[in-house]
Length: 527
Image 1: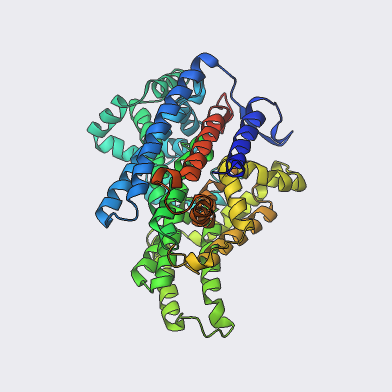
Image 2: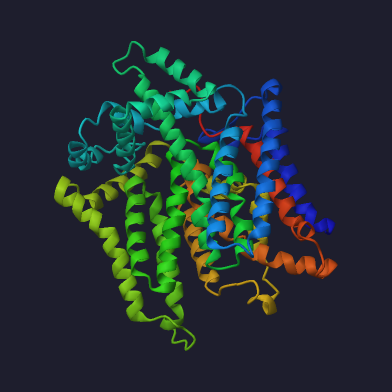
């Protein structure tokens, strides 16, 4: 391996560590929004780093063994490897989140989910929702009040999610006992602090509430870890299993996926990427069932948050780009207008059906609720001033750090360098429709960046789009084998052929640990 291959990963790791640990450069715009640094506490951090190193070594070994099996394994073995990767991602997340000092450990989960200042949906479910039917019937009127923070800018999905968890905990005492028994010490300590502060209030923290908060934390962690499954399946639509695995293995090592847990933003990537997989597969194979399920899924996403609007826009953009040869009269296209119309109708049916059901049963005009949410969100910037041009310049750096600079460099390399290995396209299972997908993702992200809708907290708000950046690295990993073959011939061992991937994964893990143990996604003390 040439030194110039090693250099970018070395530099991106050093730049991240230097910026976060050796400087006090504000991570944001002064007077508007900043991400805070966690104070250095060697006695607590160093043991956490050691545990993280061991955990990564195990993760890397699992990923390597699975990678060696990718060209040969059958579907059931592949299912086992994806299950293992999901479990490893969850364990890595638990261990790494518990490595920072003090209240920045898993204890943050209790504070973040309980206090209205950082979330508010649990509190809303605990104090305001006594009957789901009445809540839905009155939700439109509630949105008309014009709140510009959490409650006024979101559809009713998240409060109902917490209301459901509360009811589950009440109906199944055994589940509540299990959840209370499995809480880690740091989470228990945080819950004790909240219990002490709320003991004389109208709504003191109860054992049921502790169980619900821990259950919500676990669900968020599991959902985030499960992102690897649809991400792999979507990548496999456009490239080989080997490249798909190489791309997917980076997901658990993205700093933002850990820093912002257990906020609801960590729930969204798996839903968003599963929707894209279903829709793209439906379009490519004329699968009406997949299209209907995709419609249901994008409705479910929008029932939680308007952040799924750009995800839907990406799917529409992909469909248009797929149809473009037909629109321009190209003879090479194999797209049938009739098949596309049926697929679109099926997807639209899946999207509209739950909207009509909610309107008929609960008198909830969800379209108007979405409009009011959008209107209220626009009002946020009227109350909390942001300087457009400053955030326009800062957001790319913020997203790069949230993704991890090694991955950001690979995205840049993939998008700015043309693949020069056309003769090997068939052996690499390269699909021509990868270009419309990457172009769709790029167009939506560019428009979102220029819109100024994420001026502050873009690292958290863009969490739903971070799997797209991994898809953008597919061309990079398709090109690496040819580059290595040119350097040392075709007889290299498996480990030698994966040297670049191992190095990239290690650099990304170093950056992930350095970022998670230094940056907090939440402002403490909670309030």
